[in-house]
Image 1 (cartoon, rainbow, N blue to C red):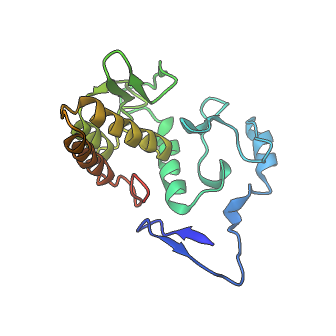
Image 2 (cartoon, helix red, strand yellow):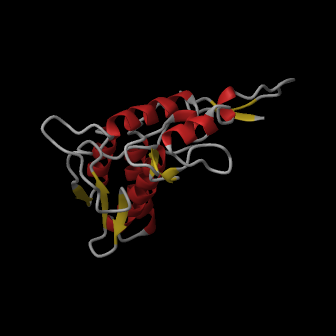
Length: 202
């Protein structure tokens, strides 16, 4: 059995005699009652249905009600804590501000016209929607470190887009220097370590 150490990203091979699944592997038995009480929908699996499986995993289909952790899907502790923080702040406007609706269905995307990575700055939500265009790997890495881009799916996409951006802006004319430059930029992204786990798996 292969397992990953979430603090070191090291993959280990274990040969256990017995495997006990965490209680977080399935929805709580009271989930149906809670869903009925709060008027939220459940997936066929019994977990709470959210707005989007990858882009918005804390907002339920009922405005103003947010969920996190194992209410949504099997989660480990770091993911549960991160989603709990996001969910707890999602519906709270900053002082003197009101929550706004977001115009884009995506938090991160590639702009083909400009060759830029565009993202919604997550640190300003819900009071302000600011779309940032990014044309350098170092600016993207800074955005990740500052949590302007957050959430495991968005971070994975940001890493992939970042390598594509590195390749698109590289001006090396021959293959070896080109590959070395892209690899160096990819390492900059990998070293951001926005969570306890590397941005890129080994």
